[in-house]
Length: 418
Image 1 (cartoon, rainbow, N blue to C red):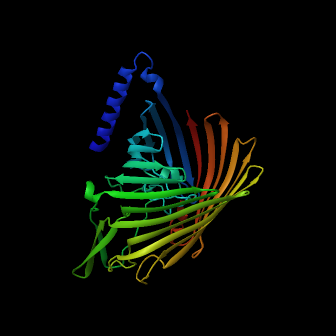
Image 2 (tube, one colour):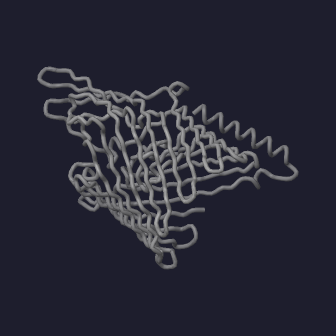
Image 3 (cartoon, one colour):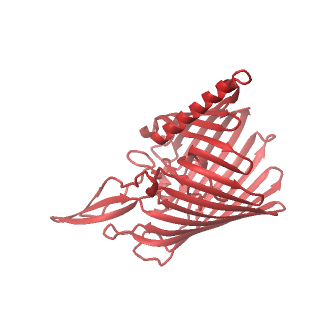
């Protein structure tokens, strides 16, 4: 918080100084731009008891200031949520200042950083941690959370270099408590499970996260390589097992562990297609054991993606992706499999002079046959006013999608941008 306060005070001082220096030529108000959006969303569970899973209104205000040599951006949210009480309130979303020179730029503050070439899937896109308060039903732009960071880019003719320093750790957010998207895990008979407070990294230089990305732009081919020295956004749950009479007490102590992620990505356009590829190697990740009695294990993991975008014309758009996720030197006691495969397919069509968009986004877990399917229609009633409606279908047993089978829902959304 002190970090952000310092940024805001610095920007305020710079704004005031610039305003005084150029009072006769430029008023500060001429350099400010206010925008934002307001939305309301309501859903209903398809199955009995047909209750609401999402019911909220949200307002986002965005303020930008252009001072020639310095650009600032601030955004804040105000939300009333009738289903998830913890989401109700006012929050600072982004707050950063940026200086752009001829061949470099520097951005400091709370910001969202997007990496990778994937559509709706995160492979190397790990800088901004995810918010799964409503599982994966939110758009990826809503799932990404901003991080307090410093981002420097050196812009060359064919190669760009990006350096990121994140001094303040932010963990992923999972659904919990009475949230209808929270997962309830049952303990074996005779076992009582107690979860202690999560141990998070301190916020100082030695505990910081660092990232480096080098991107090249060749003739018709984009390539990038990256390394991210980070903390795992998801805490590792260590076990302490104690016998208490005829029962067993298992204390879980979550702790975030260090992780290094090496990434590669590329994109190649050809005719009506764009071919995309992305891969990540996770050095030293901890994986959960299937049994509450066994400790997590440190293994190296990997994730890869191959995709194609096709625009055949007549306002059609098709995106298909094949994703693999695996663990090296796999142990059968781990909860995750040695390798898992997923397919995504996104098909959309614009109608009525591009005022109506109908789309279907499908996630299919190949190994167990589970799916998440979002069917959506969005209509632009007039400039800035959009009405959307859709259905989210979860199907399967107890995997990543099947656990939400009872949460299949229909929903409607009204959004006004200004």
